[in-house]
Length: 462
Image 1 (tube, rainbow, N blue to C red):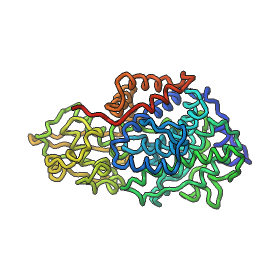
Image 2 (cartoon, rainbow, N blue to C red):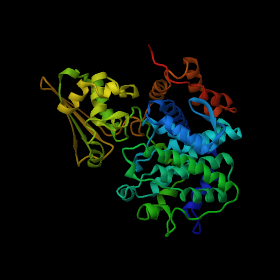
Image 3 (spheres, rainbow, N blue to C red):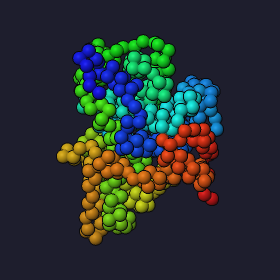
């Protein structure tokens, strides 16, 4: 879509979001959107592994109130706002959801929940839901690409709560059928609610940024539907436009270049393992070593993990993690667990395992994480020295689940199974998975939403 001389990037993006035909989505974008939906549901089903999900549910009930919108993994129903807030938090709760790596921003917690709420309310088809997820995700990452993260990141801005409202507004606006002017106003209202800083790093508040982004975008689209007006230039206005407020004027061209033909949201990475996004290349390298060399844990003399300086600064302090959240950020714990157990999942994060004397001693005595200025943040090198003198080295240039090293359908099925295990029967799990994998062909989503509500508290094997 070409930008006319009088059209702002906000208006161009709004015209695209309101007018691009879902039927014109290329096959790769359809698959990417379907995978985002599949991964979102999986992550939400794993939210019970998080320490604070129940507390957040109480907040969502109080803030959103009762209604008819489905909560993933619960028979309870809330208002569209309450459901958007809670489902968004559930997707991000266990630190295993997606990431748009260039701006270090999670996307699906903001986009999928409000799209689900309005699709359910309005009886939308699976194709309409899929299109909303694709367009909403594209809008969010386009805004993120327009912000110069090299400036915004060091200033402390945390992107989910900044770009998420735009994507959520676009997704909801698609299902509502907003006209381009209404969509533009929805973006203006979304930008007026954009916020979030890294001062919250290390606390659950960083997850709240995602949840609040979902709610803000929902409110923006619903208010714009009434004819409420907002800025025509919320992205590039010299006095408080998003690109100026959060960076140095950014790259407006990145928002509109090849819009509708090159799908930037396909760059969103899916996490195969739990843990912070920067941890994923290291786990990729560690599991490559496990597959190729199968080192005996008891015969490991030393483990050296090389990461970029910014990753080292953020994560090196978690040598002896306290609790689940810190363990999910700890390179020491994740790699030590993977090397000992041959796996790393949310079930690896019990208090007994985090405090296991063997793991604690291994982390303290036989591991180091070092900053290597020669490698970017998406790269990690793991070196294992064995007691017999052998040295095993693996370098991951891209984490498993990124576009450069994509997750397969079987990878995603495996993740879905681990997230749903103990919460759904085998038959219900298989049916829900089949519906999601064929979501575009579903004309009636009532069974889909019924299955989302069906999981109960996780049952563990005796």
